[in-house]
Length: 360
Image (cartoon, rainbow, N blue to C red; front, side, top):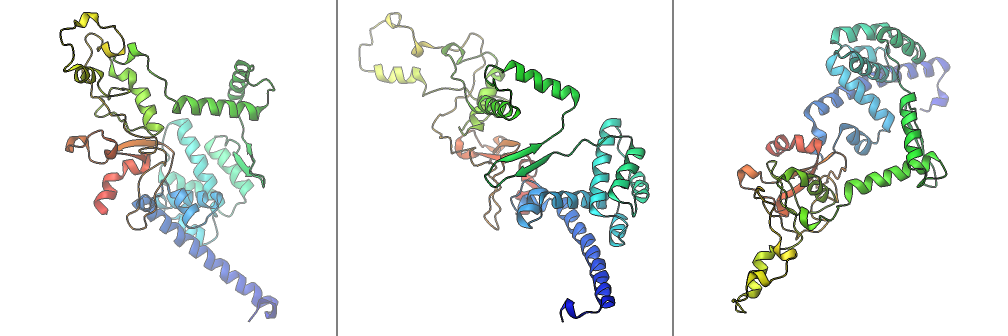
């Protein structure tokens, strides 16, 4: 049977039945998403977030995934949402808008909105259009929703970004344009953004060569930024228990000197030796620090992103957002700072690593 053969009444009846089925399926899907989120199962499947899991595994668009995540999380807090979706009184776009406004209100007024108040708010927007919903939320919550940022991809690979700045933010943007006007003379916003992005990438990834007199410091925290930067770009150093490894460019030169001079003229006075790199000593009063080997390459720790791998599928996470350094075998259990004991994890997998390990 094809739709063309149906009478008008039968076609409308069939359509109405399918719409009801779709709404029921939608709320069941939301319940599944909420439970997956509660158990954080996407982490075990090597995805850093529920959003990445929905878009990459199940093929949702970014907007569709975000709407379902918002609705699923609200459903956990206000279970009555499921029935309202099934009845057609609320839709996902409304729920996403409500969630966004509630977050803004909680942030602005510094108080969390109770589930009962959220339910009352949802009742006020039942069966309303999107525009009516916006108006009701503005009246009830007294917050202004910022314009949505948009990303549009073009066929040639270029991207159009649309964003809105406050007056103060735009003044700061203009000010930075003035400060770098010699480097970006044409005053184009795109060129300024690219210039600032490249400067920030360079600042966070390139490592400054330490001068000889700063190889040792009485305060190990002073070299922490460089150590962390080395890990970020792939070198195998990591701070342990807030005591940072000493950054060296080679082996202990004093040991090398003593080995190379053994069997030669031992009577030569050490005062005759020329001062230089071989004679560097720690600054007076400095705290002894662990020395880190420089035998690692840039590919040993960090370049591939999060190193978590799903033991069932073999899929790696690979996320480069909010990366953190993790000891595979903890320091308190005898693990050290050797490159083979280090891995990069995104913050989500690093937070849940013990739970995931127990379940696997």
